[in-house]
Length: 315
Length: 126
Image (tube, rainbow over all chains, first blue to last red; front, top):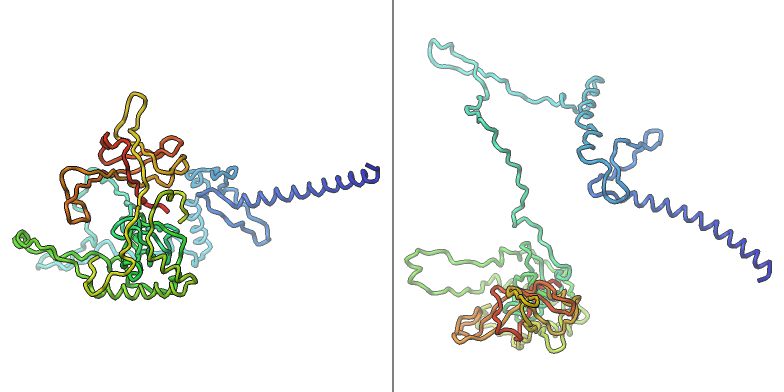
């Protein structure tokens, strides 16, 4: 409470206020700069151009964002008129022509190769004047009275070319709980993402009887346990490989009386694929730090029992 | 999978299957005091006590399992069985205490009131 300390306090206070004001100014400019960098969704971010002298070129006909909320000042139609590219490009071409600048490609400089409209064709008969001029492209023989409605190209993609998305927990090498089907409750390893959107999964077969199998993502719970399968090369395994082979259709007469169901035999190809992929997966498990635990884990089953609530479990 | 006679089934294949569904009870149809709408069933899931917890179960398939007098074919089994199932799915939460609404392919019979309904773990979203 002595005066010298009060003085220092005030001076200190003054000093601090000064510094604070300066810093405040700095921050606002930086924030303005960063905000200007983020634009509305449809606007092109244009790099600031500089003239030869080094001055910034500000295009007064450019669109700008309103209050950083993603809306632009001028609509698409207005911008079309403001930029007048429909007119400017033609003007540029004309200028180039005037200057004799043939290096620039203009609408006129690109000469279209036109075939002559009339062709000479030989004509038979003595008194027909051996040759005649004939149109090289015939005129249409039918002129519709009404305009045909224009078919706009349908941009609908075929389902087969839709992008397939995979859950982030179901990466190749992650251990997964099968939740439905014959192998429900078993834990398996995701081997690959297939192009159809399905997962390729294997037990490995030695551990829990789950074969190399395709599985839909919705019948699978992804766990946080991952095995490193990055070294594996599994190119030949795709949807074609696993597609169900249906027996060829026989004559109708035969079908009625021969009602035997042909059992699907496991092909050697499949067995081989199983063996090779399982070898890779088992090696990866061995290489893992918790290999013993992992093998026991994959052998075990997932179950719910009293007090276990899946919405509270962390998988 | 038809396994050949040469290959023995691995040790891990013989473990008995456990419960893979969440227990729920059919508490009633959606209703006001004096009108009830049988197309929507209300379920109380075991251990789910507030609205936030029901998020996990939205969209999950549910099954009302019951027995009938006549035996019918059950998919996946060769023997005729008395067990029958009515399938449905959890559509949304109901109230703030963890109740849930479900719609079944055909409305649940009223004798299912108070009976067990199985809420499966698929379609899984995790």
